[in-house]
Length: 349
View 1 (tube, rainbow, N blue to C red):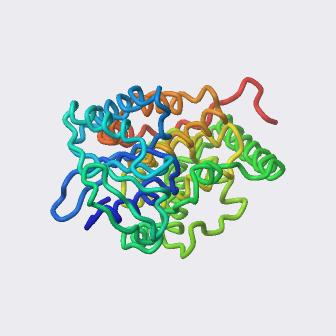
View 2 (view 1 turned 60 degrees about the vertical axis):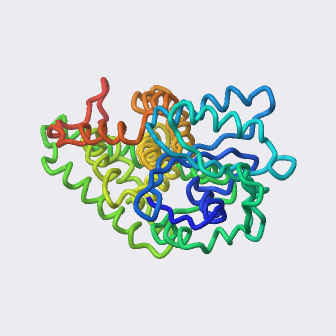
């Protein structure tokens, strides 16, 4: 993802679309690398504005995270505070800490809320200021909308976008899943496993991703049978290995919308699987807020989920998108043929 920045207003207007929501009372660090006339965007960090006693700790944490990601340049935006160019002590500390780990900071900015028509100001040069363009109609916003990205009004709204469907509907889907699993177990007992099961499941997933990619709205309609079939497919390890390839592909944005839908529609514990895929894609884009929210959902659905647990630790220790991409590339290699579902101690009749 690349940003074209003519002035500070372009950066302020881009922040909501980089985070996935409009921040308030926030410190935002956008890591970038020059790429011709634009900036290639790396991980984007956000934290609540610190109290006086938290300045040193938060600054050190953000600088350490940038260092772990091996970035060379960062753009800092402070949103909120009691007045113009507030939290200067924190900004000064953050710049010093970032510089100490080799990260250059250009023109740290302050804005009250980031709304269209507000003034933005620069901490480094008092005469450097300007007007924030409408964040919803900038070229960057339009590009993200065309890609299917959704920008929520608040962080809380983003987290709420992963809220599960009504309990009665989830119960119906859980029963439908049990029925399908029972049929697969009986087939396994009788040696009737489908040798084309992986191809069948991946055709189902690729078709759904294609629908999300071509949809004129964020979410095309998926009927109950498809939602259940997609959920069941993601319980298979070989399918998840193939889905890692989708997360790394040009279809990643469309897949993100599919994983989001399945995170809401799947009952627990199956909900953990699409939530993990959602978290992986979010972290690869540098979207730490969504990655953490999705991992929280995964671990709530299945507290013992090994992948979600390891991902949570990795994200907390600032594993870089490049490192995660390397891991996924290896994990997404052609899996061994499916041997059939595990047979429980008491098989269904």
